[in-house]
Amino acid sequence: MGVRLLNTESLIIILALIAVVATLFASYLCVVLLRIQKRLRSVFSLNSESNKFSLGFYLQQISSQKEILNLNTASIEIDNSSELTKVLTNVANLAYRLFRCQFVEISLIDANTEFYHTSCFVGEPIKKVIGQRAQFQEIKPINFSGERFGLIRLVFDASRTLDPEEQELLDLLTLQAAIAILNAKFSTQLFKLKQSSEDSVRAKVGFLANLSHELRGPLGIMLNAVEIVLSGICGDVNDRQEQTLSMVKKNGEHLLDLVNDVLDFAKI
Image (tube, rainbow, N blue to C red; front, side):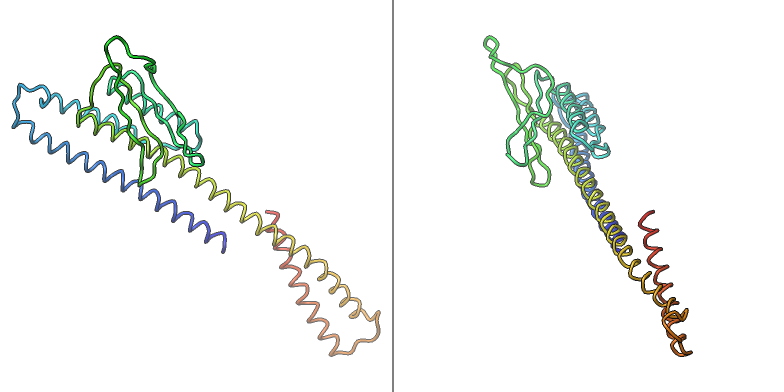
């Protein structure tokens, strides 16, 4: 009964975590879609000759957002560090292509030391200023539910700034990275929970096996003693004594059968 209760609690925890992640992700998608709808409504009221607010510009933004959402890091099974690095590298590659930068780096924070360490990078780092061009970099923290997991750094070989639309794309990318990291942490905790459950079952079965083994020895001695008395070796046995000893023998054999069943269960 204890094993079933533990598995039920584990299932409730897992379903709750999945529901929370799915709800948060769905809420963010709704916000993104509402913003897109609002912009599409305003695009026709602006000057059609403006490049910034042209229909093609918004179609390109929608296409970029669709690419980011298609990463869908919440549905990927990430059960080790190499899988996490692979998913984060896909995020970095997409950022490198969408923002046309020279270098993209994703760094994760160590939970014990609180130091950042590079998880993956794409491109070539800019080591010095080229001519009169000054490098520009954009750093965005990777957060989820108030917890900081790391940061993403974009480096350009010329001075520039990200417009609000590009900032939203970068926010969406960092969210995908955060969900991937949360996915990996969830898989780790799930494995630990499963391992703990298996260890608990193993300990309980071992205890039953040891206890049953210790009970079977004394029970065998008691039943042998009753049989000796009933056989008359120790002296004459009257009818009342024989009836009582027979009842003891019957119940003792029943108890021994139960102990043997427990031992068989432990072997299985």
